Length: 113
Image (cartoon, rainbow, N blue to C red; front, side, top):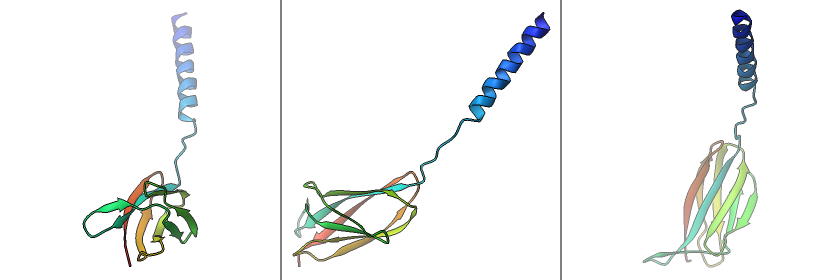
């Protein structure tokens, strides 16, 4: 009787271990770029709203919010060029490496023309 009980416990253990070890493991294969665009006045910097932020090579495009923030999500791992433009300011750009499952944060400073 003891042997049957131990055998049943061992089989149950194997089954539950098999179920756990066969469970699907998911990996995040995309990354995110988030950042803030600032207006540099020579003394201090202030968030810059409504700046046009373009991502290449994807061609995605967003405008900064009132707090100067922007975000690009669901990006394939790669090296991107983040470019920001706004009338009255010099264009600025930065190379950014996107890694799977990570958010890369950047700041971009705009100088008036």
